[in-house]
Length: 229
Image 1 (cartoon, rainbow, N blue to C red):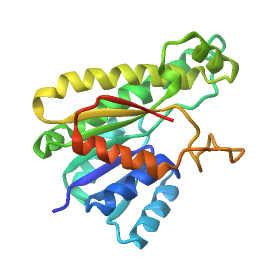
Image 2: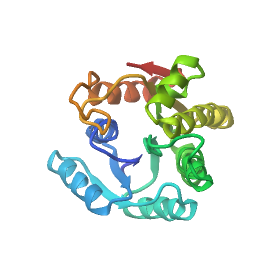
Image 3: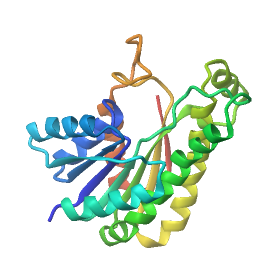
Image 4: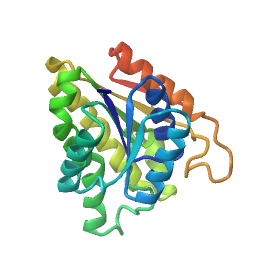
């Protein structure tokens, strides 16, 4: 039975490139997003390239839905060896006008979602000596110019989510260090081609380059956080 890469928060950029990279390395691929039609179509596109892939619809801010997702993936594709967490809570939040529900939603996805996926898949990850790979963002850093830019562009939600997630990655790495599970992140500091952030076509980073780096991290298992951009 093949081992599975669980791609959480699938879209046309980094996560699709990661799915292709690991799929070509003979992993089965589980694509996860809220839109069932979108992940079904994406899985079909991967299948045309000879990759064993299936789409799963799930709200990654819902712990109960995540637990059901992991059970479904294990039943339909096999044990999970790699988790790629690429979900993000969006950019359009003004810090002082956002509702409490909007603020909680950021952490429900970026932190609670990530931790719940890892917890639900933990037995498989430990058995496989697998990997948890997280897509970070440059707004996570604690620098005045970065905070000013995030505020100017209405991206406080993205900044809060990625900052909290950055800390969560470190805590997960410390927690799982003795279990053989590698945890690492790539903090992307530029615009990735073909993503929602590349609206004007000015992206400079190829998604495949980030996917290659994720694959390298999972193989070498030495670096916790890499800045890319």
